[in-house]
Length: 177
Image 1 (cartoon, one colour):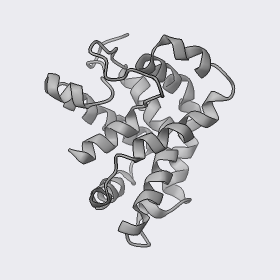
Image 2 (spheres, one colour):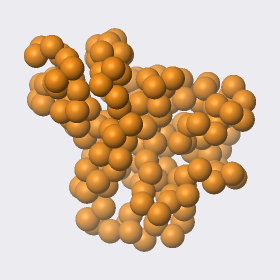
Image 3 (cartoon, helix red, strand yellow):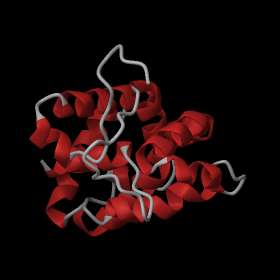
Image 4 (cartoon, one colour):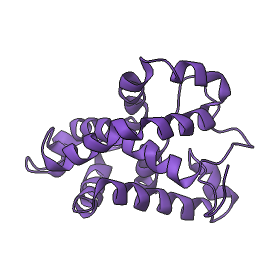
């Protein structure tokens, strides 16, 4: 389940003061969830690599602070911001939209939120996270985002308890919000 939380964290965002665990939280459409993953991925990958450095071999994919794996997510990140911003507003609430519309939000949100997400990683999780990253590595960034958000959607479809544990609710397939 820790691995699921890792990918939930990558696909979700928790802004300070946001009530993500609210009982009637709004679902995030699949496209917005994918954009959120793409936007957050480069910073989360970098910080996960730093957090796990002592627990992974020197040649681990997560430990590489540059290269093709990270570059493909960096390429997609900036373009994902408009939809990611919509997802963040759904998760955090309408009162943060004005902050998100600021020209300063895009470059700093991921850097501020990633440490909150990464703090959930335990040393014993690093090997499993590296394995999943290695399995996702050959995929284009958009396919990786779609895969992760589809897994989260399926996990959320498995009942109220599963939904409660995920920091993001992805709308059922075909639903428009």
